[in-house]
Length: 285
Image (cartoon, rainbow, N blue to C red; front, top):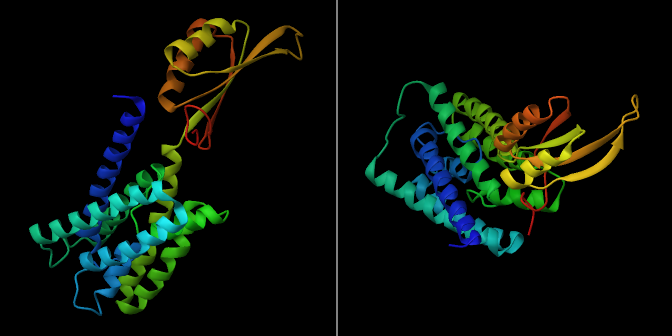
């Protein structure tokens, strides 16, 4: 099995897990409480108040319409992944509806249910955006805004979902509306932080006297590369070597330990970054 096929399988396994998490949060915690903090699922909750259809059915119809919108503006690759997410999510929601009918909230703890209604779909959305897909619906509109403007994904989602929350505030009672507002703000923050954590890398600036063992370890053991250049100490005027490299968080720990073992006097600066583009990282073609 070649590396490209393995990467595709890994992507779709992660996407499937994300869809399952999202649907549990929506069906078990969001729908029964009428939480409407954005998304097509939130819009479906509002619309069920006026039409004789279930939230799952309305969710499917709106998602299919917005899927066409996504194909037009975001390209074929995005559309294929999001089509998979939309169909799988809609099927799972309808299976859950048939297998586990919910006429009332799971518990009497509204805040506890709000937490899970926010956390599970937010984590799922972060995984999907990381894999260049989405949960469909308003996520597609948010990704179009991100592509054609300077807005990041969390700001785009906030702008789109705020309209749905505004409508829900007047459709349901004040208590539900206030919970929906809190849910929207918390969901936006969680998605932003989750995406940032998933993309996290560590940028190393290593000032040392013996670069060979460090570079060998980076290339042979960690399977990364590095940039090396000569420098001079401002105080001692002795020759030094500066190594620049980028690692994922697990590799960063191993590299730090190795440097301490082979050259404890090395000067090491480590910077967190979530925007690394190039070979071996996101954005490389």
